[in-house]
Structure formats: C-alpha cells, structure tokens
Image (cartoon, rainbow, N blue to C red; front, top):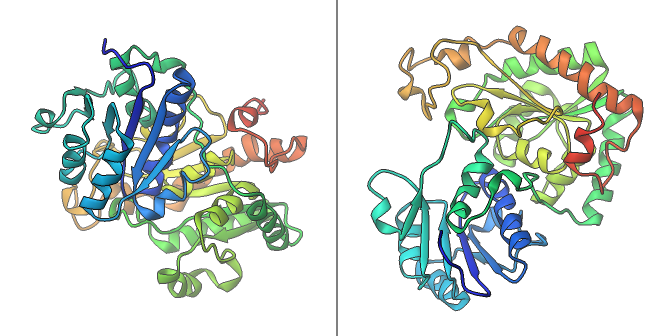
Length: 365
C-alpha cells in the first residue's frame, strides 16, 4: 500500500467528453470524503469544465489552454498524486512533468512505463465504469466498494427556475414530458432518425407524452424536418440549462451519451438504447430507475467504435440496423409502467431540486 503525505494533493486528468468528466465526479468525492485534509484539482477542457465549476468537493479546476501554460498551472498546484484517466501523449507528458511522487494510470498496453504505478481494471468484479475510475485509490488502501456512486452536477437555482417554467409550458396539459436525444457524435450509437420518430409517435399516442427532442445548432434544421418544430426542446445555451431541463422532465430516452449521464446526475429516470457496448458498464448498478434495451445478437457486445470494426457487416452493423422500434417499445412501455408512472402517481417530488438519485431509487416499489 502506498503512503500519502499528511495533506495530500491530488490531480485528476480527463479531457474532452462531458459524460466522462461527469462519471469522474465520484472519484473526486471519494478522495475528499476519505481524506478531508486533501486538496483535489481536475484538469479538463473548456466545455466539460462547466460540469465541475460548482462541484463542492473540488478545490481547483484547471482548464487546458496550451501545453506550456497548462503545465505551469499543474506545477503551481504541486500535486503529490496524479491520476491520469486519459493516457494519451499530452496527459502522459503533463503527468511526467508534474513533479508528483505518484503518477498513476489505468493500465494500457505499452503505456505502463510512463507511470510510477498502473492499475488493471477488474471487469469481472466491477462492470460499472465509475468503479474503474475509482480503482487507482485501491493503491492507497481505499475500499471502493463503499464509495458513493452518484454523479455530481450542481445546477444554479436560476437555471432550475427557468427550466421548471419551460417544461411546464412544453407539457401543455400532457401526462408526461420525455426528453429524447436522437443524435450523438459516436458512429456506433447513431440510430436512424425515423426509428426515433416512431418512438416519439408511440409515446404520444400510448402514454399522452410530450416528446422534447434535444438539439444542438448544427443539426437543428435536420431535426426540424424529421420531428417538426413543436417537438424541439427550448434552446440550451449552456450545460446548466440542459441539466436543469433534464431534471424537470419525467424521463430521458436515447443512446448512451453525455445527456443521459447528465439526466442520471439530476435523478431523472433514464431509458437507454445500447448497440455495440455493454450496458452494464454505463448503467448505475442496482438502480431501478435507470434501464436499458439492446438487440439480442450473438455478436454483442463487441465494443466496436466504428462501423468498419464490425465483424458481421461493416456497411450496416446489425446491432444498429436490425434493432427496430418494435424491439424497443415493449421494454419502454414496461419502464414507464413500472418506474415513471408510479413516481407520478405517488407525487413524491420527482422534480424536487433537492432530491438525490438514491432518494428516487427508494421510491420504486
């Protein structure tokens, strides 16, 4: 077991993806709760930094801005421990030049030589990705099985009030409001838009549900043609507005993505569509309000990132193109009957700004 100084200083490195940064927040919390005297800094890019700006467990946020200026900020923080969750060349160099006593990385072939210590992910014991991010702490004797897995994304009250009014107007007398994400940058998570349209029409018809399609500017015109302007969500000019909207809707539907994990952080029930990836890695374990569906194929789950990596059909991967709305609707119907509708009937503060995902989980029979 590695020995820490009296007041240890941890630096966590993760760039780029909003969902990944959000999934790292239990690591920040685990360090601060186990070592209240510690200082924790997080190095990330500008866009995902918004997830962390109000995090109560974080002492310093470093936004990447050129290698030299970023390195100066890292060395100014004087970390004792660097946990590199990126494991690419820039993060390896920053870790190596940080001055930290312990430079820890998740094991990756041919990259273990750049760290003082690496940890191998125990996929058999820990499926959920949050456990993988917590595993570096086992080097210091942490019991990660007792860590709290909830994702932390505090939202300003002003944005919550805006979203409450926006969702109320969007509901317009309907029984439910569902946030639906229909687009993601990841090629192996892109389900055809006509399939999502069929889901939206079924939700409206079967459950009197107003479907709020999330959008970003570059795809707004395309989505308007498919779904119509009345289904498009109010504009979300920052991640706080998106999180606030997702807190106030009744449930989320869409592929595994940043918005799905934001919905989880806001204690909103989620129903996720999975294709080439294992749902157990991206779904909170033992949580009745977060469910998923995938096409049951012999080749799943292959973890292909691009269609050309599919060993069955590189032009039309079957986990995407043989996965039809009729495969999804029975499971989605079950999710609404068993999770969403009981929460609405019991009226137990589904949209409370102070509720936690653990509190919501306990409300399900």
